[in-house]
Length: 182
Image 1 (tube, rainbow, N blue to C red):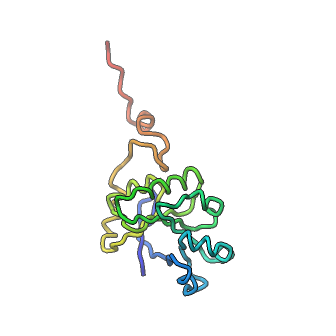
Image 2: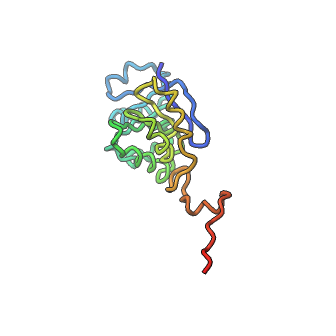
Image 3: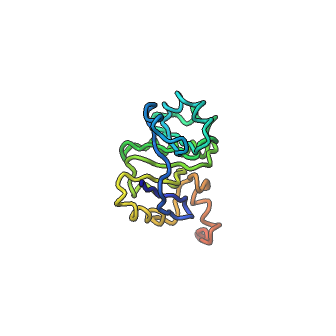
C-alpha cells in the first residue's frame, strides 16, 4: 500500500491510500487489471490514447518538467489526476506546470507532486495548485502534514490567492497604515 497526502490550503492535509498505479512504459500497461486506476506517462497516453479514454476506470497522466501542459489541454477534463514529476528538489519546472494547468487551462481535478518532494516545498506547491503529494520517504509523511500550517498567508499572488497581500491587507481586518502627518 502506498500513501499520499491530499488536501488544499484551507482544508488541511490528510493521509490517504494511493489507489493509482503509475505506468511509464507501454509494456507495463498490459499487466494492469482492467478496473485499476492508473496514471500513465504522456508517451504511453500518446500511444494508447483511444483505448485509455474508452476505459471506465479513473485515469491520470504523468507530466515531466519538459512536458507542455498545452499538449494535453483538450483531454484535461478526462483525467482524474495530473501527476507532475520532480526528479530533484531543485527542479522548479513543476511549479509552473501546475500553475498553467490551474490558471490557463482551468483544470479543477487533482494535481499531485511526485518524486523528490520535500516537506519544506509543500506550502509553495499548494499555492501553485497542487493538492496531493506522494513523498519518496513515507516515514516522513506525518511530519509533512505540518506543511499546511507553516505559514498563515503569502505576499505574492498565487492560484489560491490571486490578489497580492498589499491589496488585501486593508480588507482582512488589518488597518492600512495611516498617512504621516505633515
